[in-house]
Length: 196
Image 1 (cartoon, helix red, strand yellow):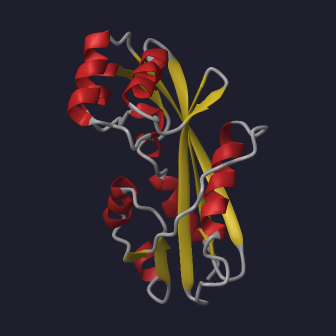
Image 2 (spheres, rainbow, N blue to C red):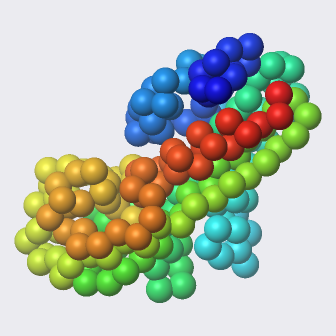
């Protein structure tokens, strides 16, 4: 059975301002509504890797506690770049972005996304990890990218679907859509297997 048919009596709510995540749901042919709530994305300092994204995805979902109707499925998500034992979130400013990209240059890092599915009665989380390898990036290439694409709303200071991804990424192991913020195949499968 196709997912659209399965979910016809349910309402999908995406709690994300990310145009990329919104487009992915459209590309999956899902009808959905966008609902946003401000959440301070702060996590306990002892968390690492997927524990960080799991925690933040659930935190974003918990902001809707008590507001969901019986037929609503809320989707929240969080993505980080995990590199050299630390999480790279969105850059604070231009210099921060420059340093992040310099640190990723010539190396492999993990992009981790967690997706939280919340209904009136339960909360479940799935996550995915993609390994991304950059070639050695020249400072002039980093500067060109930052000046022209301004990726300051992106974890790790880059969008794989932009110029830097085309010229800089030499290898990827895992889901491409995961690097853009949503492991689409896993999300589709989860919803397909949901006992409704």
